[in-house]
Image (cartoon, rainbow, N blue to C red; front, side, top):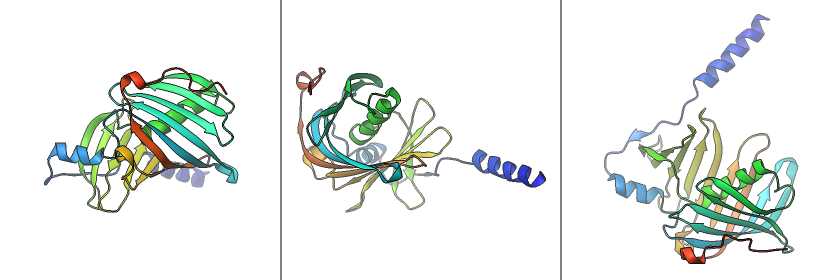
Length: 232
């Protein structure tokens, strides 16, 4: 019994000591320049983009589909549509500043928690962070880090690419547990978009999404569609 109590106490101590990764103060770079570097993988103007998506799921399951997105950067409105290889619209939804409207969804995409998670993942890949810039500095490897604080206590660390390296985004929940990562490779696509993004959700039911950019173009607010793109 004592052994079990000691193990439980040790586990609680470990979790209670969990904290966000340390960021050292930045000295040699202006704040505005640093923020521009951190968010350089996100277009500043509204756009539409098309990706192929390869999903690796638990139990060795995998699937491929197409993703069409429209992003209004000023209004923080995102339209996301998933289409099967056969051309069937699986999911179609719009999110404006976190308010979700589902136009069409086929199981398992019709579950609202699933839909919110999907929109959050797409937002992580296509929209610059919405939270307050809390810290600006360097990590233990000397890389620039911009840390954004979410209203729910979460944190998002954005580590921009240096040279040929990739840009890395890490999302932590309020308990400082890593819940998402997104890695942006080769930001030489149209509008400065990364040609490939790999998003990972760790854990027992974790998954990985690999997005390859097929094309992108700028759009105006009047081009932004708020009605279903397909009736398939």
